[in-house]
Image (tube, rainbow, N blue to C red; front, side):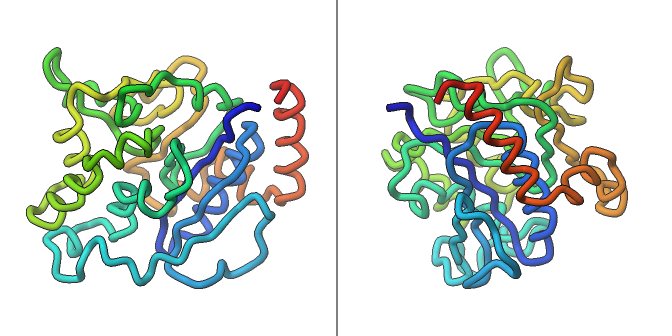
Length: 244
């Protein structure tokens, strides 16, 4: 039996709409089996398909209110990605995506990236990486959750609670996981810092784009207006085509 393919999005209630838009694009363009929403409410504001599971993490204890990164430009939900191995305890692998990512072509192959013996796979940022240091953008990350449970996730969480960082969990994961990162092809995370014009981009990441501009992007408009029924219909075509 094929390994199940899971994905996760983390977001505070002000970006629930963006999260849903991003998730519909993933459903429509992959054979994903289940999607996890880490949210700050007991329930999502309206009905979601059964393949989307919501996890209320409003009472999370990983990042105390007085922590150095709780007052940064990011919410605690950004840091919750470093705790996915604890929240999703039954999973060995999960694809984490930012809520400003849109899948524009079939991305089913992303779950097949070789992460055995690696903590995660993510796309390198060309201006921060060197031959000796691989710095990756965390807008799209395939996590080896089983390996993160070897104590690495706890190291990342402890560091985030001890020191302030510009790009929070992205900075810390890159720092602490060096030597055990697989460089994801830029077609899975096309943005300003990786490869804005990645050939045959599969996932477009609107990092750095102002929200009012993001809302008017044609890729975003397409999936914001798409119903879940339409997305699921496209999803079934991908599943039947993959032979799974």
